[in-house]
Image (cartoon, rainbow, N blue to C red; front, side, top):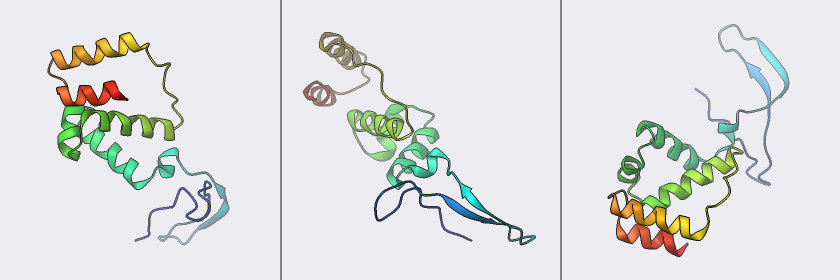
Length: 122
């Protein structure tokens, strides 16, 4: 059938709009300016991430395995998608709280020491 709608202009990266909708069964055509859903404006990489995230039911360890990436990478991609969908992150915890949360996650076996070091760096 057809191709996926481009949510962003490939030339200037501005949002795009659908101007014509056609039903192939009855050949009805509607013209106007129609907004795309916010998911249409995600990049292919962001859409793939969301698909894997949902497939794994939000289990970050499973997302890590499926994509072959580290915990910090999963968190960064999730933050990127959330921002692209218009969900701004909450205020960052203070440095001490952040360090304790990371160390707790290592202690609980949720992340490796290498992942913790990467998170603490940046």
